[in-house]
Length: 152
Image: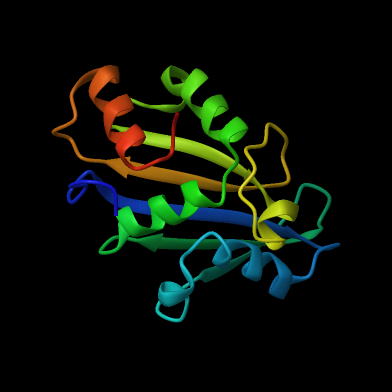
């Protein structure tokens, strides 16, 4: 782990939608691929069955990691290219909310292959990284995310 990162991240939340044309096990695998292998067996992914606008079935998968949140963020950053980490850095102000949540949309297909590529389309795994409330302002958030390896 880079430096002293304890307490910078309070939790990491994952959410993915599995449409009727997709394999539930593959979408589940894509989500798990964003989590360190050592933690995967302890992660509980909930599944909620919904109905789309046209009556099509949708399964929403959700998982939250709290105790090992920094480890998850560091692992996620290692799955990203320098290009993606720079893209996150360049759009940092748009990705952080007033509650210190940092949002990343990861391409679901690439996640299934074991890579975390930032995406701007709908076929994604939504990742919400909740940062410590002690981080005040964009500069402090940027420094913390840089320490975690998520932004360049």
